[in-house]
Length: 279
Image (cartoon, rainbow, N blue to C red; front, top):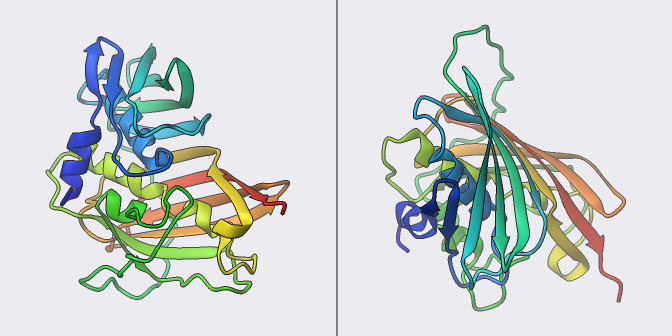
């Protein structure tokens, strides 16, 4: 893969019935990257709603680790079609077992009052992405490409991860390797993919481990996204993440995705498993 458009073409679910789809995963990876299956569910559900509707929120649970070597079946349940809102429930299955479940709400465009936080002040993105060739996450192994390179996403860290206690605040610039077409659904799928990159890692910032992979069993448990405003994901967007709390083997993270002009594009939230390994 040389660009994000090719990634989407490879993983795009293929329709096999009115509300049934099948999709593939990128290789190599040890278990399916959560951002991929979230994006696939959104792409499948998009094909079952009227064109004037846009996804405004998504709430999901990761149920089982997915096997990237076998196809994923997507079942879309058209729960509700109203005058201005529609809702879809999507279940992703492998070998007959659910690996992922999400509800997606759609809304037609409306006028209304507005207010918004102010974008944090951070250094502007450079023209080139960081060299992440040595980066390895929880679902990759030595010798395999990391998930950022595999899915054709570029990243520039604003907050460095330290091998010592630091505030639970992580900021990075992200963009899809583009260009992408002028299609709102494509950019939403790219945003969904990007949204799963920083949330989990932020919960480890206050805990002084030089390499969390060695010390924790970690996985995303759920994921939520609220889409506020359309934006281009082939331009640099700031992902501002924090972690208000961790405890009981779980960590909670929030995120805000900003365009460079200060527009809040989306908000996210996630709870993750962060179980200390017993040796």
